[in-house]
Structure formats: structure tokens, C-alpha cells
Length: 450
Ligand code: ACO
Image 1 (cartoon, helix red, strand yellow):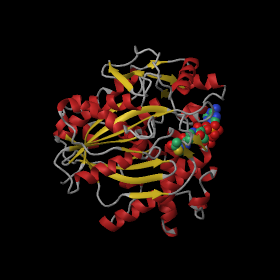
Image 2: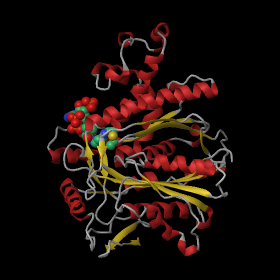
Image 3: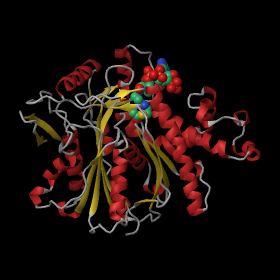
Image 4: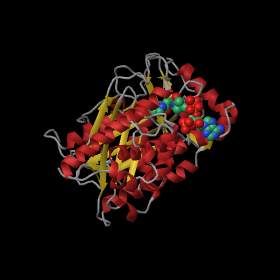
């Protein structure tokens, strides 16, 4: 099959949020730390009515309804998540409740876990399935979903929650480029979840930033090599119309784009540097591995890449700044943000670079190309079916920081309790949302839909 890629996208996020300016005041940190320092505006969060199953049920059902996909048209469905509520039973098997009533049980795929990277791994699997001898002509559906919560402290404002579903198949309007993907994986304890009774990670913030930037350097350089080998083209920032990143917080993404400019700079021959990077000669001897926290380098390359950021990356940060780090859906929330920020005519033929990072660590850089046919019906439909996202962001309910903290405390105390009946209100949920009704004494979970 040709032109394997994304045919449809569905994104959901919590119906309630806490305002980051109000959280700064409540946490008694200096004004601007979360909003300017981290670049975050609002943070979505879930009450005890939502869990990983309910988020995934909602996003899959909504995608299938909105795009009129019949259950028997799906041949593979897999979930990427790090929100684990069962050490054996996959979220995928819970989602089979949406297919069984139609007699559909022949659907491959289960769950994939590695921090924020599980969704990307599920996506790669699904692309490979469509391109393989096992393919049976049906669609693959990739679900990435998480509830990102941190213990009270300096990591808490970088939480979030959400889910995305991506319909994968041939002849897509968003086509994954072949033969140029670049991956970087190694062993690190930057962020991990060793306490199976807690939703909170153990996180070394500084190390996680260093690991992220190091993985970015390595993936970008390998991606450049792969494109040079396959297409005889030299990649730099001008190669892409948009560059999307996993977004723990928006400021790190801006620094990451600057980091790509630094990579381009380091790889440029000495005599070509003054013309391509005017005013940056003093950094000629900078080594990537020594510069993760070098303030002067960071400042200079942030300034140099400012225009690139505004043009190629800033449009992809709408959901990240308004909802927070959704973990596995974060990068793909960036794709949705980009698609709803521009006119269709501006998107046609675009080359989009994507960087996926999951602590621990696993990272990949890859790219996709939007169809160059302005009259492509698939592209028009894909984008038209995202028109509700901006209004839905606006319709969310604001919750006071004190109440937000109380709700996280309730999650903390009850997330693995059985039997349990959630007490939070269901009033804020938008139509079509699944929510948890009860957990019985055998830990079985039951849901209803608004
Ligand atoms: N006005 C403007 N900016 C401010 C203000 C203010 N009043 N106060 C602080 N800042 C700036 C700081 O200068 C800093 O900016 P810089 O990084 O450019 O120097 C920024 O705000 C954050 O302040 P820090 O003191 O560095 O923040 P802290 O160390 O308390 O926490 C951290 C930040 C480490 C990111 C923490 O939130 C965390 O651990 N998050 C989870 C881990 C994470 O997201 N890692 C990223 C990759 S891995 C992943 O995806 C999970």
C-alpha cells in the first residue's frame, strides 16, 4: 500500500482546568514562574470519575462516530499509555466493548508502555502492519492517552491529561515519510514509576531535561544523515514547514527548536558559519554535550531561532499550553494544534518534522508530508472534523487551585481502592464522555456515558 498515514484524528482533554497564574499565587512561587518560565497557561486534570479506560473509550467512540467508521473496518487497535491501572489486562481489551456488540473480535494489537513514547511505538507498529503481509485491508487505530499528575512540588504545574486517536491506512492526506526515521534509546533514571500503588512518577527534573535534549541532538543528527543518504538533501531548519515536539512544557519546546539551530551551526563548516549564522562566531568551539545548561549558548540560539519558532513551532503549542503535558498524546496534540491553526491552503504540501521523547529513555525523530493536492477530500474532512477543538477548549470549567489540590488528593487516596464509588460530579462532562461509575470488590470497573 502507498501513502500510509493519518486519515483521521480525534483529541479529547479534561472538561476542567486550573489556571497557571492562580496556581503560581496559590503555590506561593514568584509570579510568572509557570506562565512565563515554563510557558504554561492552563492545566487540564481529571477527577476520580475518569481513568485511563474512560479516556480511551471516549476518544475511540468519538472518532468512530464523527468519521462514520464501522467496527468491522478496524483490523488493528493499540494503545500507548503510561497510566497503568492493571499489570496484566490491557486497555485495548477494555476497548473491545465497543466492538463486541457488532460481532467484531478480529482486531490485533495490545498496549505499549514507555513513558511518553508508548503512543509513538504503537503508531510505528500500526504503520508497519499496514505495510506488511499481515495487513487485511482494514484500518489501524492508534490510541495515545494519559493522566499526567505529579506529587505536590515543582513538577506539579507540568501535569495534564488527554487522549488522541489516529486512524491509519493507505492513501492518507498525512503521509509518513519512509526510510528516514531516526531513533535514540538508552538506559536512564530521569523519570520512572517504580511505585505501582501511586500515579506519581519519581522524577529528576534536571536530568530529564538533559536526557531530552541529548536525545533530540542524536535523533536530529541521525535523521539528517538518513535524509542525505536517501534523498541527497541536506536537512536544516529550512527543510521543514513545521517542527513538532513532545511538549512537557512550552518553554522546553522553544529551547528545543533553538537546539536544532545549534546542531545546524555545529555541523556547518567554519568558513560557511559567518554567512549562515551571523554574529554567532564566538560559539564556534561549543560542544553539544557541554552545552545543555549553558545560558549564553541558549540565549544566543533562542534569539537566532526566534523567527523559525514563530513560524514553524509556535502554532503547534496551543493544546500544550492550554492543557499541559498529556504524556503520550502530547506530540500528536501538537499536530492537531498545527492543523487547526492554519488555512488548508497553507498546509498543502507541508513537510512536518516530529520529535517524540519518553523518559527512561526512548526517542525518535520522523517526518510526514501533507498531500500536495489542495482539492484532496480526505485532507478537507480531516481538518473539518477538528473544528470543535478550539470551542471545546474555551468551554472548559475553571477550578480554584484549592479545589484542584483537593481533587488530586482524592485521586491519590483512592486510585487503587476496591470496592470504590467515585464521588465527584459528572456535570462538567461534555456529551459523549465515558465516566467511571464504580469499581467492585474484585477491582472490576464499570462505566457510563454522558
Ligand atoms: N518569571 C519568569 N520566569 C521565571 C520566574 C518568574 N517569576 N521564576 C522562575 N522562572 C523561570 C526559571 O528561570 C526557569 O527558566 P529557565 O529554565 O529558562 O532557566 C523556569 O522558570 C523554571 O524554573 P525552575 O526554577 O528551573 O523550575 P523548577 O526547577 O522548580 O522546575 C522542572 C522545573 C524541573 C521542569 C519541573 O517542573 C519538573 O521536574 N517537571 C517534570 C519533568 C519534566 O517535565 N521534564 C521534561 C522532559 S521529560 C518529560 O516529558 C516528563
